[in-house]
Structures are given as structure tokens and as C-alpha cells.
Length: 289
Image 1 (cartoon, rainbow, N blue to C red):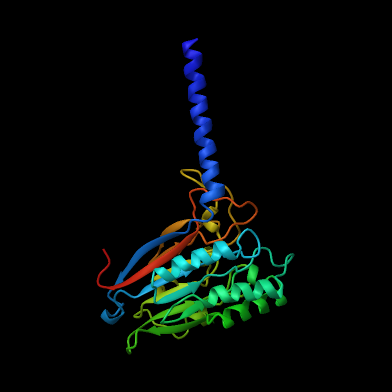
Image 2 (cartoon, rainbow, N blue to C red; image 1 turned 90 degrees about the horizontal axis):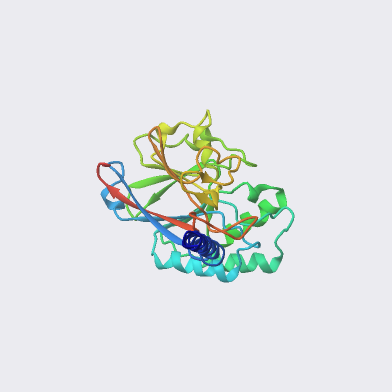
């Protein structure tokens, strides 16, 4: 009898733990954005770019589970971090091909994104869902322009901190539904500069025409970090464009690749070990450890 009671007690405890995990994943984790800080150190970063902060957000998935209140709270957290540069890694809406946003949703989202503060600039690339058709692409592009984001499509932009020295941001189109052209994007940059690539799909780094010798750091999204990510096992679901690289940080040749969990959710409004994420990078002149 005592043995049976012990077994039942263990089963009850396990059931309560499991219920707690599911409750947190469904009702708390999806709303609680994590600000993850990383220092990028290189002798190619000039001293006058020291302590510049770059924030990267991705995969908002608005007009699905993500709505005004949830996104506003996340953007307030972003603004409180006082970043100098803000990057958007694509996928503004959830399944816009079948649920195209109306004018009220467009205005609502534009107002939220316009509130993002970034004194040295706001830059974006388009994701696969941003380019499912021409109408959606035009809507997303207009929202970004109206929100003061510069869209970089297979092109580079030099960012300065009010001096002649700079870092180079390279935007490359999405591997899925886009037309990525690394050769064109890298045409005006040098290996001697500190180069950051912003793109939607992280597996671009393994494509044959991607020369990682040019790239010091690369930021991508698309995978949602798995959304439900189990230790040891990994993500329960992966996507084309993020099969090889889907969660966290990787070193690929000379490049540090950072894959964002994104902000929104799809299919089920649940996150486990892959919370909504704002990645924040601090630039530092010096030799990397």
C-alpha cells in the first residue's frame, strides 16, 4: 500500500509539473519578451563605434495571435533598451496570403513600428511571408517605409556614429520567396570592414554563392527558434530555410550566425524554451576572445 501511495504521489507531482509547464508556455511565455545581449568585438570596429547597440527583431506574425497590446508591450521593452540601431528580419504578418490585413490593421501596426526609437537608423529585410504575392509585398513595404525603416534588398549600407568611420550592414533577400543575390550585396564591401549581414532565412549561409569571408556577423530569423524547443531533442518543427540553423548562435567558417526566436507565434500560441526574443548587440573595438 505504501509503495502504491509513493508511486501515485510521484505521478501527481509529475502531472502538476507538466501542467505548470504547459500553463507557462501558453499563458505567460508568449507575452514575456526576452532581451538577449551579446558583445561583438573586433579590431575592425573603430573606437568611435564602441558601445553602439544594435537591436534585431523578427517574425512579428501580426494579425494572428500577435495583436496590438502584446506587440506594444514588446516594443516598449525595446525602446527602454535605448538602442542606436534597430533591424527587422522579416515576416510582419501571420499567413497574409489567406488573411490579408485590412486598412485598420495596417494603420495600427504602422503606428506601433513608427514608435521605435533608433537615432542611427532603422533597417529591414523582407521575409518569405512578406513576399507571398505582390499585394502583400506592397503592403509590408509601405508599412516599413511609413515607419521610417530602410529596406535593404541585396545591398549594403554604411552606418556611422557621426564620424567618418563606419560598420557595414548588408541586407540579403529571403532564401524562400525572395531572390537572394549575395554577389550583388557584397559588391561594394571589403573584408577589411566590419560587415553584418541581415537576412530572413539562416540557411542562406550554407548556399554556394555565399562568401562568408566577407561576413563577421549574420542575423536571421524565420525559425521562431523552433517555438517549442526541447533540450537535447531540439525543435519539434523546422522550416525550409532554417533546417540546419534554427536556434541560438553558430560559428560558420569566420562568421558568427545568430538566429532569433522572433516575437510572434504560428499554428499554436505556445512557446517552450524559445521565448519571444529581442537580440541586442553591443559593438566593441578590440580583439575577440
